[in-house]
Length: 210
Image (tube, rainbow, N blue to C red; front, side, top):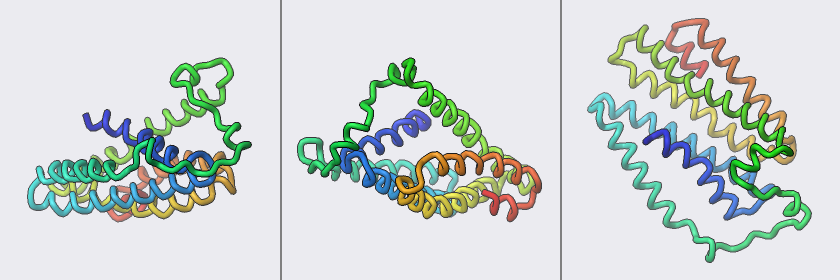
């Protein structure tokens, strides 16, 4: 259930953002701000989870339920399609924006570059999703299972604190620098992270790498 919900949030927020800002530079900047707040929230939730786990292991799940409730309240303040103002759009840029056609457009004969991009993203997330659990298992094996939750929370907090300003920076530079060099930097960071994580079992080193 958690994985299914997580797969819905990102495209749903992107669709809401596109509806509120329209295509163009405003959309890129807003996505960057969305990700900044997303990572700041993840860091806060991980920090609270680490603190609450010392009191009660089940408190983490109550915290997630409370965050879900707050998200539902926030969605209620998003204007509906009939109420939201239409942002000004450039006619040339508007014509350049491709209209999505679902999975059929992805597997169409004219979208080879889109298929390659989708494959790259799938491989990236396949590797990235396993990285943090492996680090958590390694830390738990070295320092004991009783410290696993606190150490994993520390790894999450460190990573999210770095990603928050980076997301804002990338969102502000996307249209000026182009998406390809920024994506290549992001893809390159993952194997570097994996190689560095395998060099030592020291807690402070591994948390710094994350």
